[in-house]
Length: 316
Length: 265
Image (cartoon, rainbow over all chains, first blue to last red):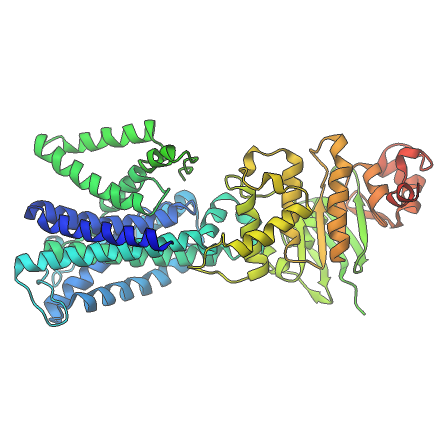
């Protein structure tokens, strides 16, 4: 990445943060949620570029959120950095175990297996009274290195952390996709046999991607938990995972910015749709998804690629 | 010194069907061996067993004296056995350059880098020289699925050869290639292979190609090796002509001139 691109990204990051802080509270809240979901979808996109669609990212999204909630409520740990570290570490360990089984499967089996694991977590949480069963529980306001802002300041703190994470992890993901490991995902999607005969381990490539995606989902869940101040089992429910797939299809897999932009658009669309049609907003989202599949099968980013005169990336 | 490849009583059955049986061969470094036989004679089954694609029902396969039974294609590849396919196996929606860069990454660097760019100037320079050697550099930026069969075959072989395998197996390298391009393709491939000194087995139906490039021929019939020896000797064997070639071959015919003959002419 050139110094010029880095400088432009830095300016864009600061502008996003300042813009986010200047927004009315309800919009700033939605924006932070969108950043969190964008990170989950970024992980999903890494898998999709390898031809794998996970309907179970809600598992790690929820795990990240619950680890954050439990730390603030039961261990009185509120430092956002410690919380993030714990959420990611825990989710990565779980992903490393589940991935040993899951990464042997492809296509619909991978999708359904991943969903099954998230539904197991959902089932465990709704039966757990200590963790609030179906109601979940509240999450305390976060702090940073000993500084404990008030409720509004806490939201701004989470927004700042979320924007920083989106830009940092976005740049790392971009570098990753340009590396052999990133290209290997596309090679897996195109031809596993050829890759094996070149000496590449298909399992290892997918396993690493699965763990990275889990880590990103955990960060997304942590951001959501900290900004909303609440966690509940719905975060592991299959419709939450479906929402991430929706956003991924909406944005496309052509660039690391696509899931972030799509997440912001998705949250805006959902908010607008539920405001104008409180009982039929899901229908509006359905039509939006239909329109994208019919007219932009490679997602919204394909518009940018068309503008750049590039061939749109094939949808998995 | 042990043979580069040795098979011992190799057998593969599919239910009641015996696809290959009693295969005992030895291949040494630098040998160019043509594998001939009619459809269903066991040629591809043999290649698939040697490259770990399918496992034999019985017998042993030794590469440099070590058994590769039970090894995956990846492990066989890392043991120094490369292969190309009858239908070129490539990353169809990526460009030729990306294909060869990925192959270079896995075969030469052998490290799954996470943040180093794959398209660095030095790597691109290196793989472009490989594409030049196989005479396909002009297609570097084309998407593979849009390319003619001959270019795909060359790319398939170029990618497999990047790891410098001691043994290379080519499954029908000229199938699907225009008649007028067959020898051009084989000349390019064989020049690269001879330079690497890899032992090569190539499955081929075209006897002109076999005569021109093979030093030795393995003739398969009904899952067994019917004849194994110098090319001229095997192809002039009446039994091979009757059961494998399917017609009489007049080896004095000018079109069956070997590469050596034409080089001397």
